[in-house]
Image (cartoon, rainbow, N blue to C red):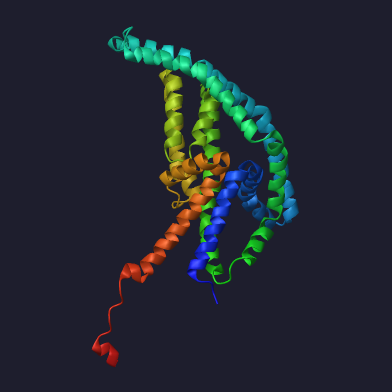
Length: 360
């Protein structure tokens, strides 16, 4: 005999509470394992495809590991130092950029920037504050990140966990399937498939889109000659998962920097603007439809809410679990809505049979 619904809700509620408490008290301990699991989940389709090509799971995992190590070494030697240097230089040149902007406004709208005007005082204070606090904030963020993720965890435990999970991913999924309550196994499998499809579309698809667009923006802006092209491309690619926001922030930052660097060279300024226009066209018509799909099921506002709530409650660990939890809640909410619309509560009472129907 199946458990009553009240008892089932009680047990699942206890499980959810234990999960939240574990995140709250063991976030730093669970962090490398969550990171490793996220990496394994991201790379599992690659391993499956290699298996279909004839490789064993061990060989597929080994090939992916070697490729990941090579990419990591190249990033550490070539990209990361340049990115850090450009970020620091951008912060340090903020007062000069502010003065250039002030001079630009003064030449064309002198009445707006009198010596005692609020706008002039605000611009001067802004540039000084960015220089004084920006570098401090950047260094503090790096220090906090380093203290949160110990170097040993980042460079040793996370890759090891990712490799082991990737190697045993299919066996783990099969083991979890055997533990499902038999009465609800078909429904749970259906929900799990929908959650996986949502996550695959968003995490893998949008992650690939962010990587492609970030690389494109950075390389194109550096080829045009923009001083901080790598930083701008990194920022634009990082926030591309929110529709239009990546191009808006990156484009505004890039065009603003181009106006000061290339003032009078309208061809270069037009090229910078054209880079983002082309990026938006390619993203909207090619990358997102092909890699993400037309219906992901994660609305940007819902995603931002989940990131904000889980990030505030659980810190960096909360940011990692926010997207999977948001996807799961969205799928379960759609499932519950469909069941509600099929229920008597939504449709009302069944019409009473007529006399003719009773006779038939």
